[in-house]
Length: 158
Image (cartoon, rainbow, N blue to C red; front, side, top):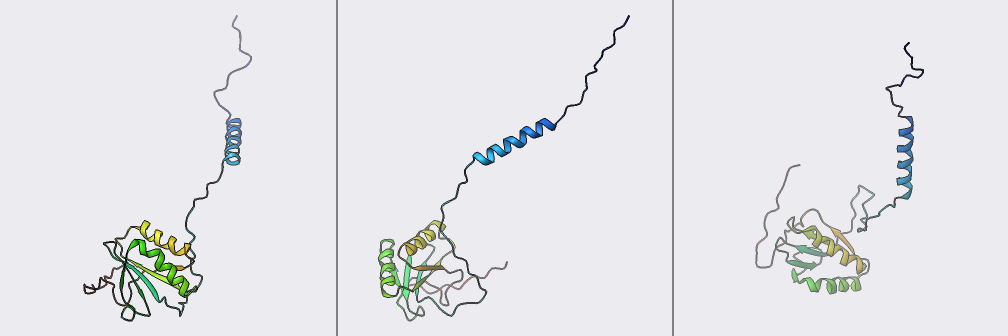
């Protein structure tokens, strides 16, 4: 006499309990994790498409050899293009801020200048209470050392 099984085993597996466990683990990790806020410079982006009538009268230029030059005046021809050593940068910014607290500085940097150097100059301007504007186009007269002639500006297509 053959005995018959009363319960046959099913080959299917219920995933309902597994999804509950995964969902609970997900909630646990979301609640217990902390959000990391990176420390960075605050960049104030323009809110309008119109250009301002104010032009910076103080400019700092950095060439591809990391030489810095500064000028004050409406154009390079009016202001003397003076060499600026890295240790003279902060006293120069302090003198600009002391002369006019509302003044802002335009920073013209060659594309070969490391971004860290540009951020360092922006940070020094911020510490001295100045607004430093990173210029994306070269000045009307290309900057160069006083002994050199200006190089023509390059144009690239997008």
